[in-house]
Image 1: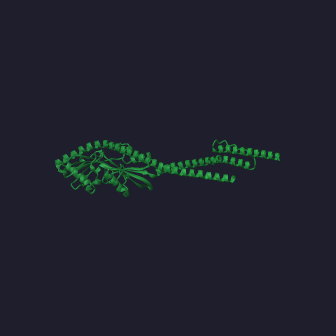
Image 2: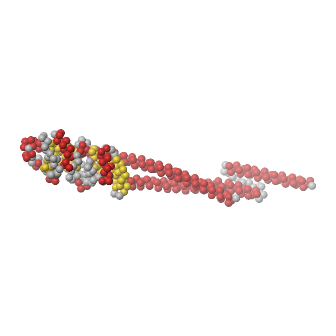
Image 3: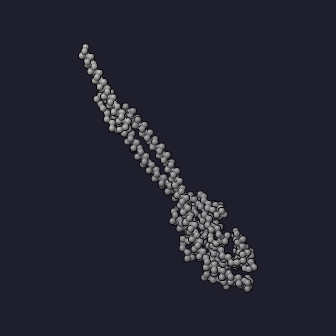
Length: 389
């Protein structure tokens, strides 16, 4: 009998463990799905927050530069107006750029002819440069000739050195030439580092660990940077996504790599305020770290696994205790049956579990009492019969 009880105990343990394992698997799958969904939502929310902050920072930067540009526009309009007056008086031979040039102002002067070639400039590097070779520039300059009035463009990149520059234009009344001013925006300007196009990405990356890089790219795939030595170009592998965002003016998101690690890359369109069509639209490249999200997700998953294992151990302990409690009444019944089978009809069993086992014990005791009384009655009758004979 004890052997059978041991077998029942093992079966109960196996049954309870099977139930526990099944529950753990089901709960683990549900938790994994839940965690993945929560992390996806969290990742989306923090990306949206970063992107919203970047756009606000870009607008603040644009406004700061707009204030910087206004005095340059006014001074450029005065200089170009004086050059037009000299042109009307003496023609192009009467124009000596250095008569209008002030080295302390930082404003360079240019003369562009009908073929869109720089024929004279105080910034000697640009003399002889054919601007028509650059996409859209020929149409842009032709539009200025047709308007026939002073035009102040917003920030753009120097065609030669990729330096952020402020350009202003004034066509001659006959449309043969365009007089131009150019003012290079450098890091030494009185603008906070946080509002520099070249350093805002470093600030964002430092404050948001999951942001690996953030950069503003021009229409030609070159970063706006006040320091020409730090200018970089769009990755040729991702140029198609960049051009899609630039043309549709919609965000584009895709999986890629950054410095050898998996990354989520997003191109976010941004437009300069009051800029000409040629230089109005740009794209912000934001690179998010996949490793950061996966590390956090794995840490939470590990914590859940440890909690699950501890819970399983507690359930196993509880199962062992419960199996002993369940089998203890059976053991008591077994011992009572053994004593009765040996003729001990005075034996009684006590089970105080207040359940079915307690009910069985009461009936067992009642049955044993009836058997004892029956045997005593039988013995009396036998004694009476023996007395008669």
